Image (cartoon, rainbow, N blue to C red):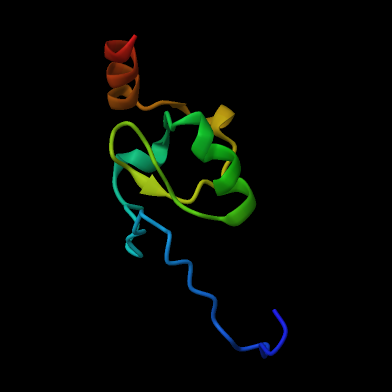
Length: 82
């Protein structure tokens, strides 16, 4: 990375997933814990990237999921996948 200043921007052209900057932080979805693909949890925690729940809620997790009941829509979708 020599020759780069502190204000240069790196662009990863191999990224195949676009992240929508508008997150769904409204409604009853915030009252629940949601099911998310396991492989997305750790990167989200480390990098602060958003995750998408089975029900479609998109957000950056920042609360203890143990404190909330499971989203009924996520639970229904999860059980249908079994």
